[in-house]
Amino acid sequence: MRSDDLDLLRELPLFQGISDAGFRELTQAAFLQRFPAQVTLINEGEHPDFLHVVLEGLVEMFARDRQRETVLTIVQPVSTFILAAVITDEIYLKSARTLVASRILMLPAASVRKVFAEEPAFARAIVGELGFRYREVVRELKNQKLRSGAERLAAWLLGQREIADGAREITIPFEKRVLASLLGMTPENLSRAFATLAAYDVTTSGRRIVIGDPAALWKLVQPSQFIDEWKNGE
Amino acid sequence: MRSDDLDLLRELPLFQGISDAGFRELTQAAFLQRFPAQVTLINEGEHPDFLHVVLEGLVEMFARDRQRETVLTIVQPVSTFILAAVITDEIYLKSARTLVASRILMLPAASVRKVFAEEPAFARAIVGELGFRYREVVRELKNQKLRSGAERLAAWLLGQREIADGAREITIPFEKRVLASLLGMTPENLSRAFATLAAYDVTTSGRRIVIGDPAALWKLVQPSQFIDEWKNGE
DNA sequence: CGCAAAATTGAACCCAATCAATGTTCGTGG
DNA sequence: CCACGAACATTGATTGGGTTCAATTTTGCG
Image (cartoon, rainbow over all chains, first blue to last red; front, side, top):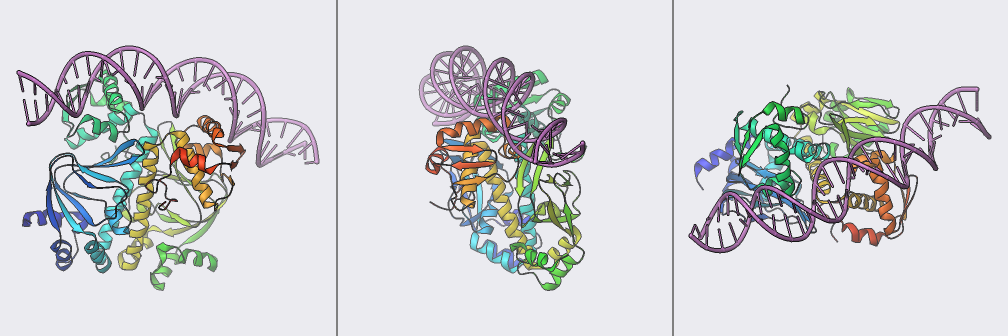
């Protein structure tokens, strides 16, 4: 395991403030693994053995019920996933698979719980992380319940634009079918949503999207800091 | 403030393990208030001043976007709400209003954060609580994205039945319009969902519902421990 | 270059929202 | 205690958003 990977880890808010001893405890039995795209890392219903950290690549969190499947979140580097399951020591509620080749760091769940029990600083950091994640899901639930498909797409585009620092053109970092599922619709319907947004000067070519008139989209969805995490205040 | 109310509070998992001094810190500046039905307790976007505890009654957590409004959860005694906002010291993402006359205990947010910072046991308890809540919302998001309206109703009915210890008849403890919004549909559509479930031997009279054939509903939704919190294992 | 998977488009269908009208319930005041 | 009114619930008709199925085009990759 490379030491600059450890540095990456150490810089995460989650690991700030814990002692070096605690950090060593967490990482000594950890291991790093490379996965190609489309590899299932964890399955809904399994017991958590590791806290996963995406160092490089892209991971899709999804869930199934009967025939249906839906994407819940996309995890980008550098961040952890399924912390809640690890810390409560309950089964996973989501499955995870790589979308592209990825480097994943795996910290033994037992170590995480041990340091959690021993180091108040870690416990407090976990509170911060869980609080943040909780609020993310609440936002997503509101997004789903309060907005139409086209609106969710428009909001997502504006969010990506924000991340890209206001760039005119953005690129979807994964397949459109994945985006469709993330937004809670079928691939067909995503196509139609894009067709709808053409009237708002959104043009597509493959995964690249040009947002010609952000103000028009803005007017359509009226992004809210109560739903869209990227939007703080006005 | 009555001492048996303090006992109720003390017994919540959230307050287990903290010192008496810490508990006193939390409760000394707390106050208890009675509210009639339909009183708004907090508003989306406000800053948290108190951690609220429902001692008696029913509180509805909801959110608005433009014209639309949706119910996110119903809080029943005895439990806290908006802990995540208090602990991260961020604005509320939900509003709250009483559904019936209620007794609400309000703990100053500053005290909560103080004890959180000072008492590792409290920090750990909060992790447990947040982890649990987080998983609740994930379940709800899956419920919304993976199930149809009628299925969500069927699952909700089976959950209520479980809570009522398998009773044949259950009673919706609030208006049907609230249930409709909680389940993510219109009141009209809830009526039709009930009409659909008549084929599964579900009969209604006002708020009272008779589930004549639980197995039929079961077959319809196939409740899953990955979505339905009340269902553990098979 | 060729193939397989992904994306798009069209058509039919279905679930859900909206609009409108009626029936029911419940709280209030006479 | 009854009568009344307002809010809630239900039902019907219509519309609309979204899914499904099928066929075609495009893309990406070996």
